Length: 72
Ligand code: 9UX
Image 1 (cartoon, helix red, strand yellow):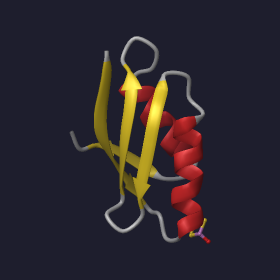
Image 2 (cartoon, helix red, strand yellow):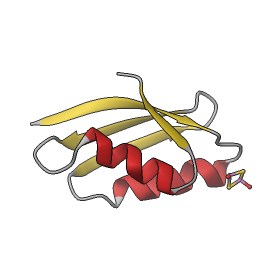
Image 3 (tube, protein in one colour):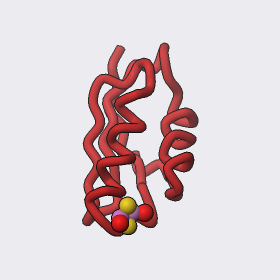
């Protein structure tokens, strides 16, 4: 089943930051949609729990150089 989670993405300062995070999230197998909001420092990610974990989503964000957290 597809679920949508909201992640906190801390440390983004420009649109290149949010675009990089979006691309990284969308590149993960199991992610069907990702939208990153620069101003609120958050990301909405729709993904298959069978294919990818919340931890892997957060790892992808952190590999871009930002702090990730779980909002909901
Ligand atoms: Mo923008 Mo983000 O110049 O780390 S890419 S601030």
